[in-house]
Structure formats: C-alpha cells, structure tokens
Image (tube, rainbow, N blue to C red):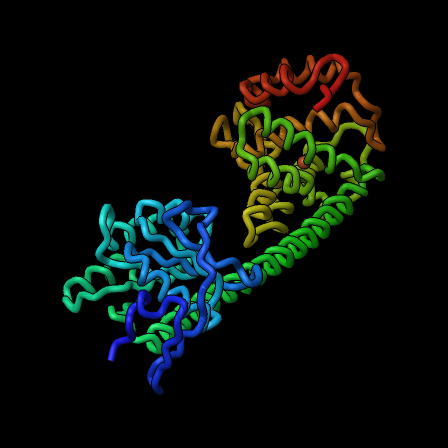
Length: 390
Ligand SMILES: [Fe+2]
C-alpha cells in the first residue's frame, strides 16, 4: 500500500508498518540561499555528509522526500521545484545524488537528465534516481539510455525509496574512495618513477664525467656541452621535451673515449693518420655502449655519440653523412662541442681566443656546420664577449 503524500504528513506523524518507515520529523524548510525562493534547504549537519538534490515540481513530494531523508539521516538535502533553476543549483551544490521527477513543466526530466549528464565530469559517477508515476517501459528505457541509475515509483514506498537512495549513495561513496586511492597511487608511482629516472640520470652524468676526466680533469666540458646544446635547441625552436632530453643526452657524446688509449687521447700535437683512425672510433664505441636503449633519452644519446662528428658537407665520420641526413640533435651537439672544446684549455693545448673561434666557425658554415643552425648559434647565443646571458 503506498505511503500517503506529504500534505497529509507535514507536521504530523505517520506510523509505518513493517515495510514502511515512520516519518516523524518536521523538517525546517527554509529558502535556499543558493537556488532562490523556488528551493527549500535543510542546513548541512556536517561538511562530509552527502549532498542530495531533489527536483520535483510538486512541493508536497519535495517535502515528503526531505523528511524521509532527514529521518534516514541520509545527508544534506536541497529541494528544487522549478526545473529551470536546477542546473544552476547543480553546479553550485555539486550533489552526490539527484532525485529527479520525470514530468515537470518548462523542462521535463529527460531534458534535465541530459543536461546533468553533459555537466558531469567524464569518469565521475553521479547517481540519478528517477521519480516517476509512469509504468511505461519505453519511458524507463529512455531514461536509462540517458543515464538514469534507478527508479522509484510514485506514490513512494518509503522503505524501498530509502534503500535505493542509500544504495546509490554507497556506490557513489565507493567510487569517490576508489578515485582518491587511484589518484594517490598514481602520485606515488609518478614520484617513484621520477626518483628512479633521476637516479638513472645521475648515474649517466657520472659516467660521462668519468669518461671526460681522462682529458679534462674538471669533467665540466660534458656538462657545458649539455647546457649549450639545450640552449641552442631552444632558440632553434625544438620542443621542450627535445630540449630537456638534449640537456641530459649531450654530455654522453664522448662516452666512447673510454675505449681510446691514453697514448692517443692525451697525445699533445697532431695525430698520425693511424692514430686519428683509432680516435674516430670513439663515435662507434660510444654508440655501442649506448645501443639497444629502452628509453628515448638513451636512444638520443646513442644517436649523438655516433653522429656528432659528421659534417654538413659529408666529409665527417664515421658514416660520411651529409646535410639533413645528419640527425638534428647531432648537428646541435656538433656545434656546441666544437665551440666549448676550442674556447677551453685541454691538457695538451691552451684555449683558442674567442674571435679566432668565431671566425673559424663562420668559415665552416655549410662545410662542417649546418649553416642555418650555425647562424642561429652565432646571432642568438654568442657575441665577441662570449656566450650571451640566458
Ligand atoms: Fe667526440
């Protein structure tokens, strides 16, 4: 037997049988400050309570549901009788559950349900319980297709209505808990990944310094080449990922020097053709050390190690690549490496004066260096005082 409507209960007591819920609460109904005079509002009991929005053009139904939910201690309830105010109220209240009447003037439940679903964030579980006196199966199917989660029939069976509301609120709560746990897990995984990546980078930085230490006991050349390559890549318009990869991968360009004998690596003066042939092998040794890398960073480092001595006119080594066949990152590092190596002293020679280095580099435009990239380097990054401030 259906439960009588609110106008018979307002301020009165109804005693339920075993299948019913007694409603003895006289809800303090006040005008909703959020939604205006068309809404009634039960003040929140505590901030963590679920927020429930009722949209029904019949005030008596809203009052009945408010008292039922207050009796069931289901949460903080806001009732709307004008469906045109519902969407504004929805945005401001961000409810955990919507009880939605189907047949209303101005905007029926289907239209409002469609609008609510469009306003719900992707992946968010917002339960909508439809209130309908309509037994028509097609009506229910249409509501389900639009995203309704459950139905209660009018006139309301109160215990069933309360149970359905609690079920939907519990499902919503579990979704929120799961979402928080997933976000927390993602944050922990991201932090651990960052730590692991930083650890890998540190290992590779120290490896580059170890190789460099043999002919530059400060070990700073590799890091300067990394920074200068990143700056050149940025002014040349490469994207942020490429710039940061270059900053980390460029210092490994001479890692292959590990495999070159000291008698050749540290020989003062000119190398013989046989010695130069051995020296050239630092490119292929470096690429071999870095080969089969799983990360894009190591793969870039391998490319740079192999090709940073190729020349624009095809006279470089080890593969005599020419022009744009030389990977762009290798062309960038080739310029940075050349500039830094000549402007700093080595154990077997002093630093070359800056004007002479710039003149030499200009004369090598289109021969040793990519002319467009060199022009950017010489106009954007260096002048006669040296490197421009960042
Ligand atoms: Fe090199």
